Structures are given as structure tokens and as C-alpha cells.
Amino acid sequence: MKTQKMLSGLFLFVIMATFPYVLKAQETTEKKSMIYPTLGVGLGFFYPSDVNKYVETVIASGYDYTVNTQIYMYVEVKGGLTFRIKKADFTAALEYDIAPKYIAVTNGSSFSYTYSRVAPEITANYYLPNKSGKNAFLIGGGISYSFIKFKEFTGSAPGFKIQAGYSMQFSKINIQPYFAFRYVQAVDNNISAGYKENQTSFDLSYTGGQIGIILSFHSRMLYR
Image 1 (tube, rainbow, N blue to C red):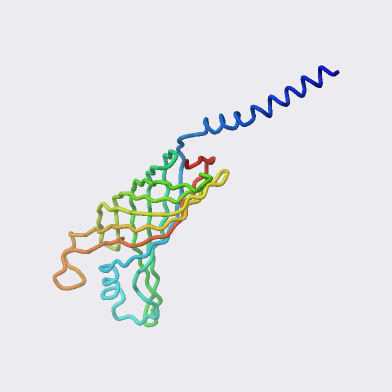
Image 2 (cartoon, one colour):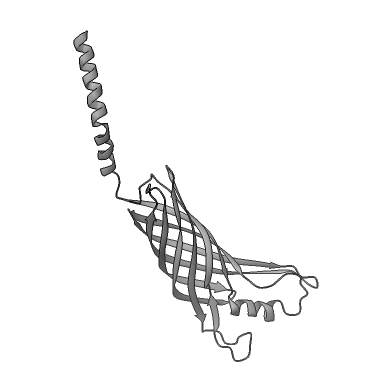
């Protein structure tokens, strides 16, 4: 019995003595890269001048209305696939932006219109972790190619985006609120007559600021 107690005590001592090394080994075998899908939603702020001028002088001309006819905001949804290493990630995504507008008219039928954008995009982020390495500030940017449409006007053009935010990792979910600035300027040169004198092209802009959030579902991987 005495020998059995001594062996039990020795076994317990060995476990306690090696426990820190087991933890360290687990840390060293932690994932150093992963691939996962991402989803995002955002709200953008911009002023597409040719679109707003067209609505004011052509669509809304002669009507009595009580609300502003111009577009200032759009909604964005996107999905993509992200490859992440410790302090950086790279994402290929597809974005869809839409700016709808409904105008109630007092002297006729109400009308509505939409201004939309579809774009494949590639982005990269660099992370500045906190002390624990679980959360981090992010700075990054991306390039895209946009296809923009408003009524009969269409255009496409490359563009870029810069962004910053904060990444919060929980056990199975990663939440990244961010703000960004996007530059996209497309032109429709195939119009025969514009809404104003001598106009032969129509500007389709999606340049402006944006706030949003990106979600992904995966196990936690430290940023350091």
C-alpha cells in the first residue's frame, strides 16, 4: 500500500512538472494559417453628381414632392474567401451595392429608381495585435473592377479601397467592424444625347466613405 501511494505521488508530480511543457507544445502546434469564408454588410456615403442631376432635371422635373430626390447612401453586401496567416490576410470577394430611392409625388404617380454596382475585389489586411494576441487593429486596402448601372446608363472601371478597423476573435466567430474609403469612377460614353446641353458622356461614380462589419466563423488563431 505504501509503495502504491509513493507511485501515485510520483505520477502526480510528473504530471504537474510536465504540464507547462504540454501547454507550450500545444502553442507551438497551433495553426499558422487557415482558409475560411467571410460575409459582410456595409453602409456607404457618396454623391454621384450626374445621377443626381439627371433625377432632378429629367425624372423629377414638373412634379411636386416633399422629399429630397438625390442619392447620398448605398447598402453593400459581400461574400468571399479568405486566406489568413498570423498577422495578415488576403480575401477574394464579390460585392453588390445598391442605392434605391422612392419619391412620393403629390401631383402625379410616385416613382422610384435604383443605382447599383457589382464588383469582384481582392483585399489584403495587416494586423496589429493587442497584448493577448486574440484581438487586433487592422489596416489594409484592395483593388476591384466595378460594373455600374443606372437606368439606361452603364459603365465599368477599376478602383481601389483603403480601410481600417478592429478584429475581435471569439471561440468560433470573428467580428471585424471597419471604415473605408473607396474610389470608383466609371463613364458611359455611348449615349447619343444627355440631360444637359452638349453632354455625350455620363459619369457613374461610387467614390466615398463606408462603414461596415465583416463576419467569419472559424476557430480562433492568435495574431502573434
